[in-house]
Length: 127
Image (cartoon, rainbow, N blue to C red; front, side):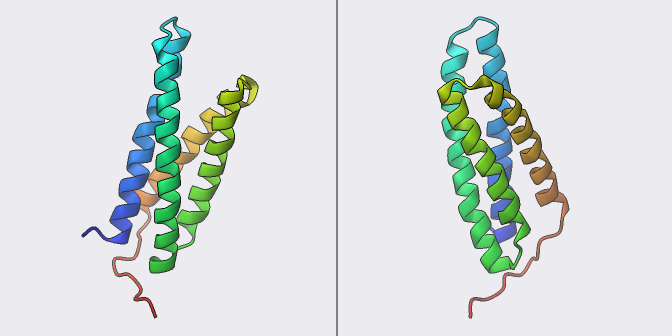
C-alpha cells in the first residue's frame, strides 16, 4: 500500500498531466479543428474530477500527516478550476482564459511543492 505522501504525490501528478492537455486541446480548436473543442470539454471533466479526488486525498493527508498546506493549496486550485470550468461553459472567455493560465501555473507550483517538500514518512496514528 502506498504511503499517504505517495498517494498525494500520485494524484497531484495525474492532475498536472491532465491539466497540461487543456491548452493543447484549446489550441487545436483555435486552429480550426472543431474536434479540439470536444477534447477540451472532455479534458475539463477529467481535470475537475481529478481535482475533487485531490481534495479528498489532501483532507486525509491533513488528518493523517498533520499537514494542512496541501489541503489549503489544493482547495485554492480546485476553487479556481471550478470557477474556470463554469466560465468556460458560459462562454465567458474573458475570465476562462486568464484563469485557466493561472490555474495551470498554480497546479504546477503545487506539484513542485509536493515533490520537493518533505512530507512525514510516518503517519500519525488515529487516537
